[in-house]
Image 1 (cartoon, one colour):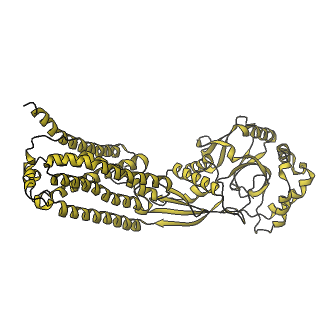
Image 2 (cartoon, helix red, strand yellow):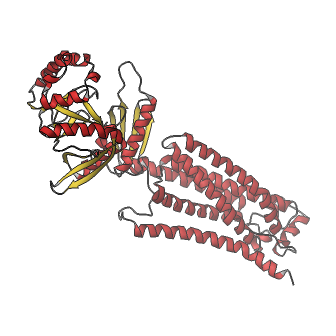
Length: 546
């Protein structure tokens, strides 16, 4: 009599485990529904996983770095550029983009979803900002370009580092003739270059070298300018934020310089303010803003005006915030992947998964008969848990499902089914050795779980290693494989094993029905052991269940 409460408690544990596990899955789906109800993006259904470029369609842009003649692209600079472009893409509001290097001189940007206007300029512009003095402005643009190679050669011969900041400021406030005599031939060459310079509204191609003067265009007026060497580089910007100037009804960019540059900026603005002379803000070789210095700026804070819209102000502030690209890039190709092609790939991936799952189900039913239903149920539970985790990870960390990711999920079907097979084969071995089914379940589980954990551990180690060292979409395969392998462990421990413990107490399985998969003929058992199987429905010693 004393054993009855213990037997009742033991019988309740497998059922409780299964119920709690299923309740957790239901709670996860409820969480997805809650996220969908409170989310700000109403058009983005929480029940649809986030898809990558190969499944949803989108844009693939190839940027090719320009190397100096006779030299290769510097690998650290290429990686630095990749990081900056990645930051720009994320800051511009593009989610789930993939930014990778390729071939030692290319950066590939893959952006899923609809095509975005100006995305090439947003992510690929060098964004090299410099503050220069306006030595000569409001010069007319030539109608036809002149050959100024000889003039540029004269300018390049001068060691401009010997021209001090005070001398450059004096040249603007009092005239270029105040510069040292040894640079006067270069000044004449700059004036000749400016006379033959054409301002193209589509943009100009100039050699924007920081420590040399620059002949360029003021984009706001279309006039030609002669600018001094850089007095404050854009790399000295500590902060850049877009802001709306309500008094002028225009968007500007508020910048704050680092401490080391505040002194130079103060000196420049102090001298220029005496005659309200100008300094230019130059972006990638073109003047985007020419400002008159009306007062000394002592705190290193200023604003950039350039006829910005809210979008372009945010774009430029992001470029300045994350720094200029250390290399110059050209667009080597821009490819639009349409939804039809992506849909074909998605359907092919889903079809492959369905065929793989169907083959596993057919094999399990033919070989394990009734126990095959346990495998089917476990696979359905694993699929439900996998789907809800993909949804939550997509909402939480931006996980996107790609074609390699689907491949990882398909591979995991075999891993999950393998765990069930190991467990069932251990049960059948114990039954052949003469144990009742209930005892065979517990003994087989003890033998099987270490094998299951070892096999899953190998898969997880492989997935983690691949995720760490791989790049691009291969990491999607590794992540999906690791995720589904972890789910396999939970399903086997908290659903499959408790469910088998419950079924072992039924007459159908416990007495070895011919369709159960545990009948004597299917196991190859004759004689005394058949009766032992039949007595499994009423064992003298209750088995332990989780």
